[in-house]
Length: 84
Image 1 (cartoon, one colour):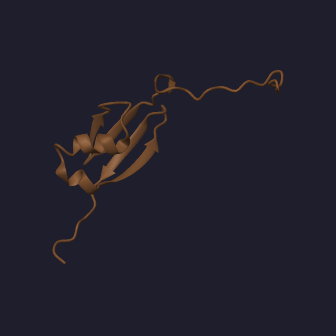
Image 2: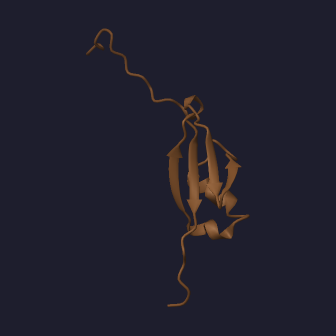
Image 3: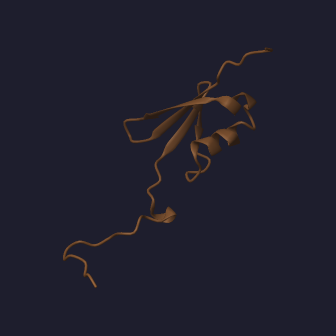
């Protein structure tokens, strides 16, 4: 049976509660929205905002990190085609 090398330990990955939550702000149509749930994915937040802005269903996202470390996620609606 092997013994672990001295000074080397295997750390377990951090659990969900141990992960550091980044501060995020969401932007759409020039308006800023606070993060409704820091544990939610960007897609989940987009789906929440889609209740007020249905055009976000197929929105593109652009992520930018501000000077204070806040993640700024901007939603841009995609121009659709009518008809075929």
